[in-house]
Length: 167
Ligand SMILES: O=c1ccn([C@H]2C[C@H](O)[C@@H](COP(=O)(O)OP(=O)(O)OP(=O)(O)O)O2)c(=O)[nH]1
Ligand SMILES: [Mg+2]
Image (cartoon, rainbow, N blue to C red; front, side):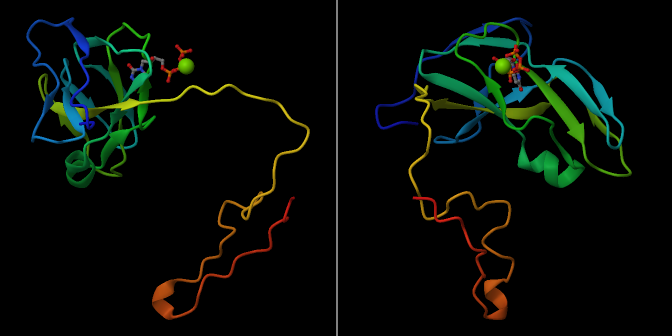
């Protein structure tokens, strides 16, 4: 919830029996989404399921389809493209591409089970200005582990690799 209160989002039930996305507790970031179909996902496999709802977000907002930590913990189930991005202009059914990361057990969901959560956020669009050379920064082009692997637990500070010091 923003300081100005919840944002109003128009929602349409494409499947009249599904519950609207709901926040389990006041102040929760994610509103739970349910699957409209029964599905069993074999170990390592994925399945796209519908949620039975479509929304119209105000301009300047996006909705993000996040996994539920309980399913991750209990079943090893996540979302392939986590978090899925629902654009403000999208009017189709919100769908979820579930993936079963468990190596041994299939994961079964029944119509109406909560399978994901929708987080609504303000987003910026950028105006991209092409330049010959970017301004320098402390990090430069260091990434992908450039700050070293030594853990704080063994008393040694991480050893950063040298960066290019681009100015
Ligand atoms: O988990 C998701 C992710 C996306 N979408 C819908 C809403 C989103 O606005 C649209 C397109 O998503 P995205 O831009 O991520 O996919 P794309 O592969 O780039 O497709 P497109 O070419 O349609 O943009 O699909 C979902 O319903 N669930
Ligand atoms: Mg796209």
